[in-house]
Figure (cartoon, one colour):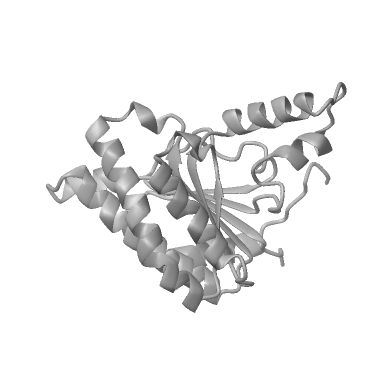
Length: 226
């Protein structure tokens, strides 16, 4: 039975969920934030070590400014409101991506949440914000070059990635029916087991999460071997 250290989720379908209910897209994002809370708490109770959630990509800046501004405000509100949830469930908050493009107040909220939960020893919940895997790898290589590296190894790159302290992804889940990686954790998902579900993110449940984990437990993982 496979050991499980790290689940990553591409949380897709908020906008379509809202459209189906004849609501604005922002309503879907708000409900999606509720699902983040419920799945994080459930993962913590399962004693899962790492959960990484794709919250905002480097490409999402292409969306209408009104929606982008709402998402930034929602992230700030979520972190402020969820600190109590993190602490009550022994969840350590982590961030990956380039947050330098965010407002100073949002950056402060992010780093304050990281600081206030750094003592937590249960689940590490990582939000990927202004994150793109190509950008992450490029930043890592440039960092190594700047540090004087002339011959760069795979181990060097792994040590410079945003996820340097996080194990590889065992399970990658994408909700919403699409079947693509969308520039998410490409390096870290090299040998991940991929699960795609038609369920839109606001409707994704702990039961479906458990069913995916149960299926994963019985997969024969070969890692290039026989």
